[in-house]
Length: 552
Image 1 (cartoon, rainbow, N blue to C red):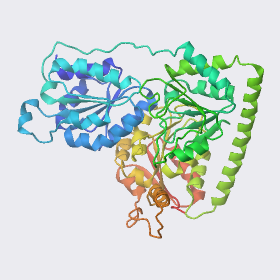
Image 2 (cartoon, rainbow, N blue to C red):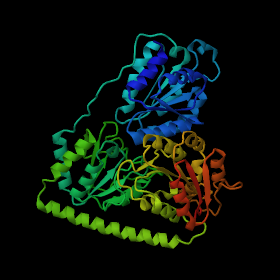
Image 3 (cartoon, rainbow, N blue to C red):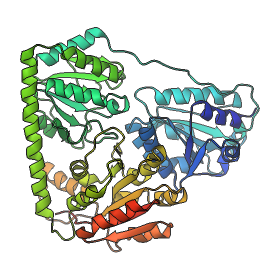
């Protein structure tokens, strides 16, 4: 058999169902063989970044390793930003790129470069087979490393001549690998620290949702009466949005995080990198004297940035459920205290809901409409089984408040801070969840980074509703410039440089129409719900360009 067949059989052996890619001449070996593997669906992207962005979200939404096929050095270069996002999202993505014939290596052929070196900084593993004999073993290793905690992207370069060499070494897998279980002693120590605290708090990352520990985290919060915070940027829904314990996301500065967590004498960190700051503060994000306990599914994330009072490594679902069981046997006085904390959290949640309603009423009649009003109108008509893919950036909080997000799989977003992930990621989310309607909410600036995704949605008839909140500016950059000036004592009445998306104003409806997709421009808040209903009634891709107000 030839190396290309071993590659294809490796995908089948690892239960791969689809490939996201942007084809080129060096990928002919894969493309030609697809005809013989009808169980592998190929989703065509017009830009390599879109292909990787789609694969990243597919991995998050499906829980499976995703596969991407890119084209030589320029194509890999186009994908690097989205590969970084997949790395930050802990997404198991096996990324391949065709490489020129190795017999021409010394002649510096067209489009060639050291692909392994290019990919290495943004992957867990990067390699290139020297012969067809290495393809099977390298693919086994690639899938294993991609799926090891912390999960992440890997890269394999595929030279065209190696793919057509003969070999007797076929496709293999690593078999079933069992996750480690946290020690009983460590769980008992965590229980004792929690029982000794008077006001514990939880910061939850993405891994509890991915590990099947979502319900266990809810049970833990309730049994100890803890407020729950989520990471600033998240890929998954780690806690129900309307639960009384939900206190929103942690800020992007250590000082503000310490203020937010000041009331807690114990902080329990569950499954995340904690914390990803934007601005420097010479301060710990934790209140003085607070005990810090961290539970992770891998040693790498444990105590990576901060000293701990206790660190536990093991399967998250098992660890958290075992901890809940251990805490359930606490004496009545502890449970009475937890109930009082739960009652206070419920009261705070109800007050927050009243404040949110007051905020909505304040902006109800604004022209152009406020993002909050637009999202409220959309949420009112969105079916409960819809999936929200969120890249609203400065409207993140409004999305969290307006949509009742209940379970893992109801919400996906990008990590790492790079923009353009939303409209690209919606493709992979819809492929992973074909029986649910995906609603991608994006700012206009972010959407333009991956606008080619509209063509892929239309080409493959993925019934995504793209909602573009067009404030016609890089609003987040204006906010950050304000913060920059304050932090560095820069007194300025200067305007915001190069942050307006006008002259010309972008027409996303026309862009959608140009790719064969139905699109509407909505300028009146009273028309948003009707436009959303029309989009939902369609069984095809649809775009709503909703014009909203800019920075106040």
